[in-house]
Image (tube, rainbow over all chains, first blue to last red; front, top):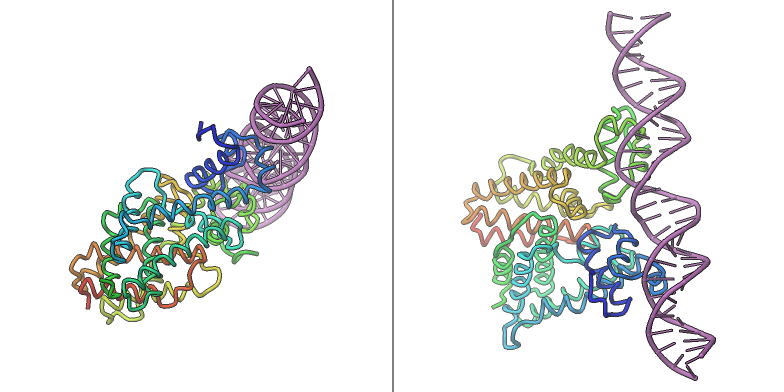
Length: 189
Length: 189
DNA sequence: AAGCTTGTACACCGATCGGTTTCCTCTTGG
DNA sequence: CCAAGAGGAAACCGATCGGTGTACAAGCTT
C-alpha cells in the first residue's frame, strides 16, 4: 500500500524507509517499516544486517536524485549566480509542499547525534557533495573566497532546512533574498 | 550522581532531563532518566503527567538562562550591531566546547517533528523570543527592514545550530563573518 | 507520640523494541 | 513434474518502552 508493489522487496523496503524515516524519524520500528513496505522482517534481515544499515542504504539511494533535483538548472546557459539561486528557489518551492521537513540528510544526522553511525557517514558525504557543488559555482562565478561562500550557502541551506523541519518558518523568499546578499558581498555577478 | 543531590527531586529531575534529552535525544527512556536524576519513577509521575511534560518543563526551565547568556552583552554601552554580533560570538564559542549539539530548542523540535507537542510549543516560544530580541536590536540599529534582518539572523543562527548538532562544521568565524555581511546589507552601522 | 506528606524501592502491566526462527506458499528452471 | 530457492506470516526471544500499584521509610506538624 505504501509503494509500487511491483518493485523488488529491496526497492520497496528502501522506498518505504526513505519516506517513513523522514516523516516519523529514525525511531520508527522495524515492524512498522516492514509492514508498510509489504516486506517480511525475515526478508529485510536477509537483505541487510540491521535496521541501521537499512537507514543508511535508504539515504544512499536517495542521494543522487536529491542532488540532481537541486542542482540541475533548467538550462546550462545559466550563470553561476543563477545556478546557485536556483537551488534556493527549489528549497523554497519544496517548503510549501506539506510533508516537507527539510533536508533528510541533515534531519537524520541531527536525530542520530552519532557521526559514526553508518547513516551519518552517508549523510555527511551527501552534504559534502552539495557544498562542493556550491564551491564550484562560486569559483566559476568569480567569488572572492569560494570556500567561504560555499560554507555560507550551506549555513543558509541547513538553516532553512532545520527551521522548515521544526515548522518554524514559512520562508517566502527569505533564503533567496539572503543568498543574494551573500552573492553580492562575495562578488559573484 | 548526575546533579547536585541537595536540590529538590523536581529540580534534580529537570536538570537531568535537560542534560540527557539534549545529549541523547528525546527517545531516552524514563527509566534511565530517573535513575540518572536519582529520583524514583513514582515521584516523577507524581510531579508530572507524562514524560512529554517532563521534557517540556525541562525546556521551559532552560529558556531564561539560555536567552540571557546569549543576549546579555558585556556592557550596555554597546551598539545594536555589537550586541547582535555578540550573540554569534557566543554561539561560536559554545561550538568549540565538546558536547555542544546546537540550540536545544531547535534540536528538540526537529526530533519531535510535531508542532503540537508540549515541548515543541515551549521551544517555539523560546525561538520567537530570540527573534524578537534580534528584531528589537535591528530596529535600534536602524535596519532598513528589521523584520527581514531578524529572520535572516535566525536563519544563520539555526543553520549554525543544526550543522553543529550534526557535527558538520567547525564554524570558526563563519557565522560572525556572515552576520556582518547581513548587517552591512541591512544598513546597521 | 500520632498522623500526614514526601519520597524510594520494586514488582508489575501491556506494548513495542531489534532480531531470529519456523513453517508454509509461491515461482521458476531442469 | 518436481525440486529448489525466494519470500511472506507469524511465533518467539530478551530487553525496554511509558506508566501504575503497593509497601515502606523518612520528615514534618500538631
